[in-house]
Amino acid sequence: MKSDNIGSATSAAETLNVSPHGFWLMVNEKEYFLDFDHFPWFRRARLDELFSVELLHGDHLHWPELDVDLDLDRIQSPENYPLVARSDPGGE
Image (tube, rainbow, N blue to C red):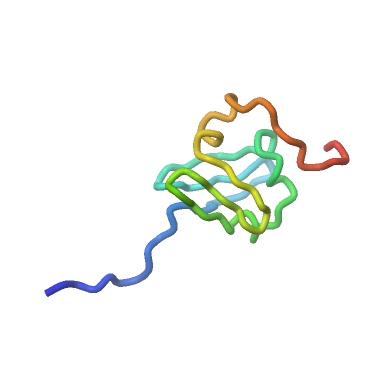
């Protein structure tokens, strides 16, 4: 006899918490902190936009409402990506 799955599968990526300095992201049971200095695209995002994250192809994260795509390497080693586009053309 085969058992049915009970409940739904948990997301492989989810936003856990937000602070004035950045936000915590859980990806495949590993936690990351994305600070707004290294990831300025999220600084002015609404909470619902931050929490709407998808994991694609195992290492590609996508925030559809923000039109932001990041791979895990950029999150794990932001120092390897020194050129960061400004999110605010006004120069914040």
